[in-house]
Image (cartoon, rainbow, N blue to C red; front, side, top):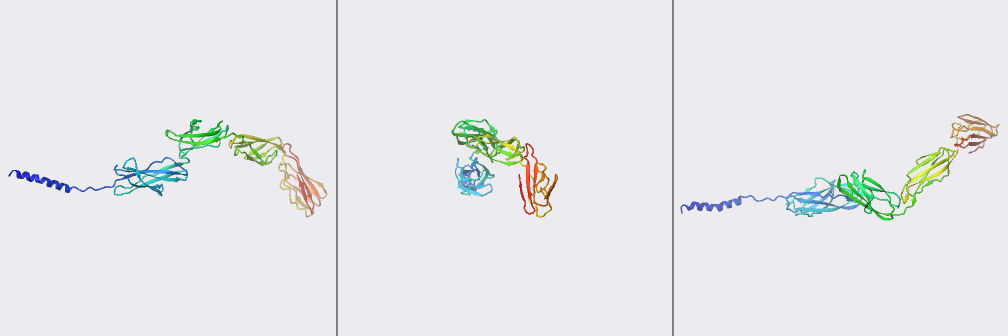
Length: 406
């Protein structure tokens, strides 16, 4: 028995030591799990339309469900809306979505904040950078513009990329079949001249491929009803003249149902500046040509009208206010040089009452001394092929004066 006591004492001590070990262990302490929130890249949005914005949140421990709400904000920090989270692909993932209305063709920026339902289990989080969403007319990075198309008339198809900085190429189709090769985009735009002999509804399409990245592409379509052609586009010249005198400047209005005139030119004895035609000869023809565009069912066409040139009408700065109330007064017959607008000198003479009026004149003046009633005339010779003759008549009287001329 004496030998067993130390063993019994030792064995009896083992439970006591175990008990002391359990009591001495520290209690477990719960720590909230971190989360990560991000906006899922939405691609392109559509202008004047509601677009969906979705964000996801993930619990970093991989086992805690991120229950709560996600608040969406603009890049400036203004709150748009908030939505409750819904379970995602795993227990530790969740998503939330809102809809927002895009009013402009621009790029919008967004941020998101996750608010946990139970902050003791999860920590909130927010995006570190803004997510950009580019807005386009049709939700694609390419748009097609198709005018009204008429059979047999060339029309211009226009492809526009969004944003305009995209580099790549486009190809046009009709009813799903290719009708153009690859056309390089320049400043966000590419054009293609299109003509068809078919009538009725046609599906005109365009496809875009990003340079060096065929995985980035876009497509757009437009239906158009091809109508019969109205023929060559006519042009009306207003006013409708048949002649124009030398030296005259005439402004024309050019009207065409196809649209604004592409060009306006003059040939022969006249010149054109914008819509003003000036005759530089008094004989021969002045040929005016206006080119109308294709459009409104018309084919682009040129219309020419021919005006006969006539000698120009000479004029002079005749004194219209000759004072003849005092007998013996000397008055000027003309203001400035004694010449017409064509540079031709004017010859003056008394045709009635020669004893009552005395004329003195030179290259730079013409005067008359009135002693009583008289009639005088001034004349300038014609210039063949340029100017018609000039003549003016003055009736002078100390009490009554009249004038006639041509």
